[in-house]
Image: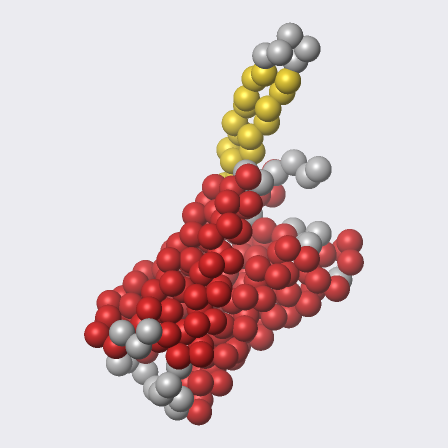
Length: 201
């Protein structure tokens, strides 16, 4: 299975859990139900992390792929534990969200340099969402909880849709080729290809 398809499998569940978490933040749903979905999503993405990190060449994944995914796996596992226990003071979790947001910004840039504009955009969207989580939880701005819930659900829909497209093999990757010539000139070719046709180095 390609890296994009494996990522898509995880993002499909991530999109679902973000949508449900957004509803939960707006007062719809119980802590226990939300905990179950977050535990499932955190576990699935953590298994993907282990596969990429320790599966060797068979996985096509890298430590970079694993590390980025682990940021979010831990988010859902921590949130599952907090929701199940009914923890009200989530300032520590909020500051962890700040850490995730900080790492997500340069990660998006690195992904963009690799040619995947769509995935780069997702990383920056997640950076914005996790930054909002920090403001809401870490800084205890409870007045924005309703808006944060709505934003979370929207990001969930976008993420889940992207994950589904990745799983089906139609995720578009923009491959930028730059050819240099001895004359000092260069040409740039931009190809938009489905992930399944993306050339492997």
